[in-house]
Length: 247
Image 1: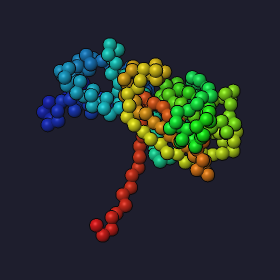
Image 2: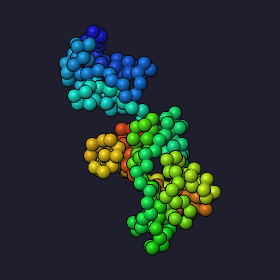
Image 3: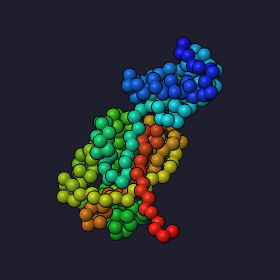
Image 4: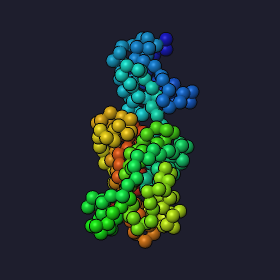
């Protein structure tokens, strides 16, 4: 049994939280490992279920654990943190985080893109595009379902290997490098088709994104859209404030 000090002015649930946080972050466990159950923690600390649940909610909100009904408490998988405004491909971001990137190719086809994508890629209304649908993984965990539209004028065909970095593939085959992108991120719920591919329930919290990637000459190379598992991915932005002189 672990002891908490009932004479301290700190709430019991916060004391439990502090002890569990120290235990979970001491490096002795790996992401995804089984940890415990509510009942076991009640016995360890000799406190009520409500106290344990409050402590676990804090740990869950901190991104340290996941609670799975009927199974118990598990260490949360590593969350990929993307530092904006650095422009990196998914593969480059995974490697930067010490994770192994992977791709499950869903489909490669030639399509007539929707009007908004035709406009984004500066295509004619009658132009077709190459559509690459992929599941991107980190350490074999499905993280992103993406659909990438490429102008056929790039010369890429359906028979190429699209399991690696798309930006590197474009540069290798065309000599054109992605140097800039407009990236839009929105909160979303994962819809059924995407949920099945990402291994989550329909309605799972997600991040929806749209990105147009450009070359040195401001010509669009790729239009990408997709959905990301919000429990495994986050964006971090460093902001600076310019003083308003004379105001």
